[in-house]
Length: 192
Image (cartoon, rainbow, N blue to C red; front, side, top):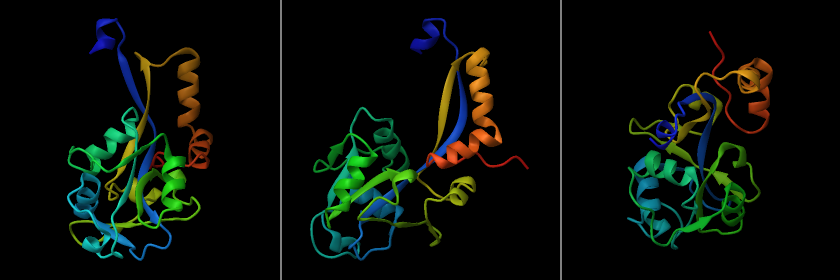
């Protein structure tokens, strides 16, 4: 890797989790999609809401832009690494995706769990292969049943020390994890 070539040993530390919620306009009659349907919509295999049980009309697909890590994470977690539908509209961030979906009855997108209460949107439950429905919540991230969750990392050069080490220790403390939760991310599971 480039870091190693420069004498930097990247040490990852998981500090929180995020779950990417599939959102639609609040007027959309659907309450759930299967993982396969999510893949088909975002990859462009299906073009109309009626194919997945919604009201007739083409999808308006909102994604993060290509420079976003979330753009790639969604491809990996939801689309079997396939390319996005050519019609998808690339947005700068969660706020923009939520705002567009919130004013477009044919809209669909994904946002971090902190944005699932945005005005005009609702979150769809995801049907797993066994037929069970899961929603993006702390419990489903912790028990690893929600399919579109991912860890958030801090990286240090080798073992964290000095101020960086103190900051990471604080973030991993009970008080730090409360701040993680208040900021809209999923805290680490409490130690048993």
